[in-house]
Length: 510
Image (cartoon, rainbow, N blue to C red; front, side, top):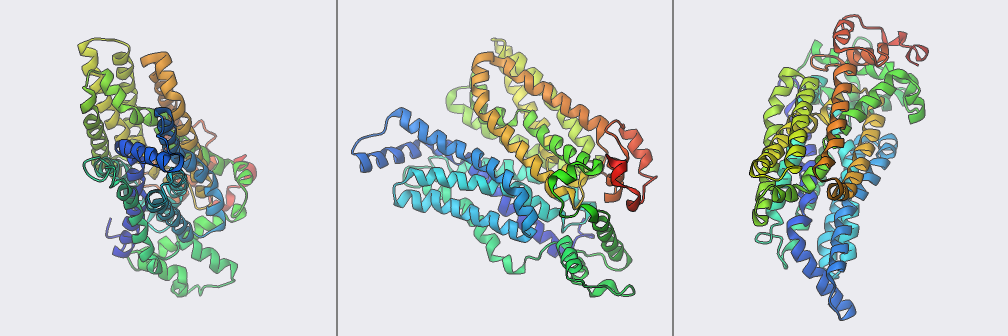
């Protein structure tokens, strides 16, 4: 991979992923182990304000609001991603993500602690959710437009295990015996903000993306000498981002130009316009289904209530947290181990394998939680471990990679936007509804997830192409010629019979 992307490009990718997605994992779990300290903080605030102690119900309400505001903010951030992607440069969008993230860290730590304001903690969680929802799409969009398409899957796939392993780290940092104590919890809330400080320090050296420069050059009337295209700023940036020089570099530059030129007729068009064009509509639907497959697996429900699942399986309540940490580690390791397999077997195949394992795990989890016996308790623990492996091998590994590979420059912002909106909204619904459905239905509450995973897997198998060793034009041609009734075998045949971009008319695609 290093022979394609330059060291500078790899540095930008690592900086982007580390400073956006590590804080995501840290903030996701920050309140869980530090809840006792937060309740003490709330009680002290009540004493200072009202000269009385807070009740158990008031503590629960405030902590629950703080927890849920992260999901609410993420949903709102994902909804607004489309506007940021449309009206701001990719680099500017990522900077805004970090400014929001830093602001939330200040609110949840310094402001909340010094002014004894649990409102600042709640608002800070909401602001952090905004950053989370925006970063979930804008971060991968930036990487997708600076890296070689040949290495896109390789560099996007680590996002899953980065979040999971940072969640493990977050559980450790916010533990009462580390930084989650009565006097130290503000430090646990502040640490994620340091990653944004790190990114902002490098902003002067972070470039915009190649498509952005190409669009600027087009809008300003800059022309290129046919004999020497290397005088344009966009080409100079590409040269800086790649280690490969010569004809290969020129060929990639021409491919990027062709991809943008083929999309000129819808460039800057509204979402409604894009959805009326078959090629792009199918790309948008594909991105939504692929990302939704992670929520369909029940990740939000299983991971938020893993302690309860383990306790119902006979694990002592005092040890359930350690089992949860072990599950997060296992999931992160599954993503990490599968990253190398991604380039060998292809994104589609890894997603199908992972979803198959998830179906088996959910089936076993349903059986174990609807029966009360020692063997069922052991089966419950095994099913959660199997679930972690399946999610890490498939939907979590490919949730960003596959949508990025299935979309083009024009469709990608809309596709990633809608996919993230669906992802966070459904995640929020699951997090609120699942506890009640679990209480009402018991182990049968996992059956809807099993059905949704099977439907998502069927769509992937029959209607989506394999992206391994396929160019952007291959993928676009697949969606242009398919009517959502083509098998992967048909896709393989068509990849050698590409239609010229100018022949893919809007009429043909409808």
